[in-house]
Image 1: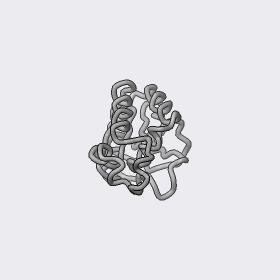
Image 2: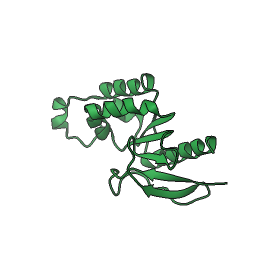
Image 3: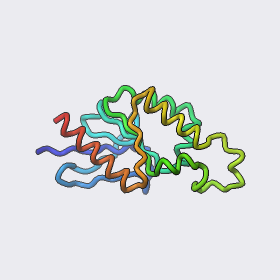
Length: 156
């Protein structure tokens, strides 16, 4: 059985994100520019797009940026578009509670949990993006691996 190679985008910060080692299914990870998203499979870049969000604060910041909304729209060109969150739904609903944003700044925040949930609903319903709140980094990484493994099996 052949194995897939994960492509990790060059813009993923060192010390953040995921790294997939050689195993029974995967050749490992290479770092290469990915046009849309953060992770994909080599030679299947046109099929799979995985965008990773590390925290509710990062997602909230992105929800206020036109660039992020355009990226969500561009993800419709993929057969398998995913937005994987390294946190749970309850953290989004209660945002900014539980974030590392000081309570003194909460009143001035433009983005709240309800707006983040509206953006997620748009991603799902209008753009067909699979949004998965994985709960933590390890579960998100395992979910990404399982998605890549299945996409590779389906197209090999």
